[in-house]
Structure formats: C-alpha cells, structure tokens
Image (tube, rainbow, N blue to C red; front, side, top):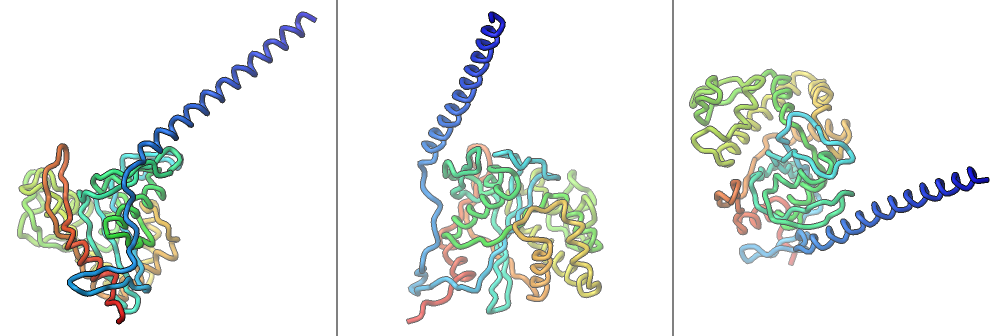
Length: 331
C-alpha cells in the first residue's frame, strides 16, 4: 500500500513538473509575441496606388505586366534550415525583370543592394513583427533563408517601388554564377576596373573571357578596388549580364536542349516560387523578347554609421514606376 502511495505521489510530481514546463514555455512565447507586437509599431510598407500623377499627367497601372525578382545571395550554398527564423544570407544582387506582355518586351531594373528602404522584420513563425529602415539586402536575412526570406525581399522591393506587385522570385547562391558562365562556355568582357592585388588576370582595359572563379571576382568584388562603392560593381554586373544574355541566347539557338540542361545543372543553387518547367518557360520568353534594357534608380551613396547607404531619388523612383508599369489614364 505504501509503495502504491509513493508511486502515486511520484506520478503527481511528474505531472506537476510537466504542467509547470508547459506553463513556462507558453508564457515565454506569449511574452515574446507581445514584445514582437510592440516592436512592430512602425510605418507599414506602402501599398500600390490606384493612379499616379507625374509631370502633369495622370497614369494608371497596366494589367498585362508581370514581374520576376532575381536575387544573388552572398553565400556559396543554402545553409539555413526550413525551421529557422533568421539567417546570414544577404541579397547582394537584386534585379527585377518586368515583362510587358502587350509590347512583348522585357526590361530589367537593377536595384542597389545598399538602398535604404522599409524592410519587414519577421518573428519566429515568419510573421511580421516590425518595419525598419535599412539596406534592402538585409530583407533576406529575416526568415528561413529560402521561400520566406525571398518573399520578404520581394515585399521590400514592392514597397520601394510604390507598392507595385512583385509576382515571382528566384534566389541563387553566388557559386551559381560561375556554373552558368561555364555552361555557356565563358563570357567575354572588357575589364572596367583595376583588379591589381585582387585578381591579376583581370587587367583594366583588356578583353578577357571569364571562366570559373574569375567570373565571381569580376561581378562580386568591390572592396580592395579604387572605388569600393556598389555603383561601380553594379556597372560591371550590368555589363556582364548583357554579355551573358547574348551568350546564353546564342547557346539556346545552337542547342535546343541548352535551357533544359542548364536548368537541371542549376537546380541545387536555386530557391523559387516557380517550378522547373515554369522557369524554363520564363527563360524561353526572355530569349524570345530579345535584347533587355537594364535600368537603375538615381540616388546618392553615403557612408552610414557602419555601412554604405544608398538613398534613391524620389523623382527617379516615380519616373521608373511610370515608365515600367503605367499608361496614361483615359480621359
């Protein structure tokens, strides 16, 4: 009888401890949620306006425009887990492809990774807890490093561009650049900057065919060069992308399976809301639309408390939105 009484007491003790543990954990999460809500009392990222007035003319948004955000991450592999709520992968490269279906035209908007704009801070469950002003590249560091982080970056781009829709996205880790470059047989460029001491194979003014790690050195490096701002790196990236597009287009014409095979080779480097088949269709549309014009936003680069900061000119943002997404309002 005494043994049964002791066993019953032990069972009650374990039940109490279990209840206490559940209570403490629940309280912690409740307090965390309250704190996150308090932290979230910031301005909301802008929603798309119904119309825009620019230079004395009223514009409305087109219905036949589709957007696709490309993010180049500053890590060489996807390391974050699905369950993580933050990661270290910043979006070093941001380019929004804008497909105007009526005009059968694709225009690209390259966005400076140092652009200061409103960014959502995400909580442990991926929910928005705050909106802070910081470099747009940091939007990807919130979330799981995959779909959640990509969508958060897309939201930041949307807010920057006065609420325009960012329909789809794809992120690629940096090693994917060299992979695609080499699949295309290398890309020829005329070196724009002095890479002495960084990559001595890249001599300013000389024409070279980029291969392997030299490709990454050319499109990624900014520190250690004469001008370490992101502006000169962006100029190199635009130059390289134009050359890469021409080379990939040539390869696709010569080999009907090039796009499919390249997509398979690149699969491990990619996170996207589109399937492999849809990405192949996208690539096909890009090549069929012909040459892509690459635009940028005007603005000012300054040295912040810790890092470079780029402040886009409001008129430049408005003009770009009108040119890419709008048409004159009917009388």
